Image 1 (cartoon, rainbow, N blue to C red):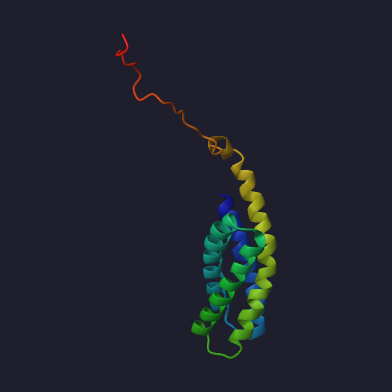
Image 2 (cartoon, rainbow, N blue to C red; image 1 turned 135 degrees about the vertical axis):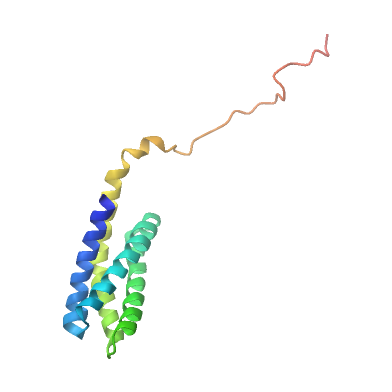
Length: 145
């Protein structure tokens, strides 16, 4: 359920920012902004927030999100619309969404840490050891009698 809440929050903010920048600023139709926001939110949450953020720090995940956002907005805007300023629109979108992503990542980390407290008891700490001895069989040889 937490993933759905986080995804919904990401989609709403992504759509709002892109609608202001792309829709109002560059005249991109509502449906195209909605589609770009949906695809960007899906891929961004799966890749940036669940995979990259789990393995790196917030700054690294934000930088990867900037590249991802720029690429998706650029190629999708170029494919869906006919107009000038696609590069500028993509750059401004990536910069604006990067600020949001930085704070969103903090929310994701907090939410996931709260959910993982119950599961930590079942994860071994990596301090497992085995016994070793010089014996090959459990019985002694009776050759010395």
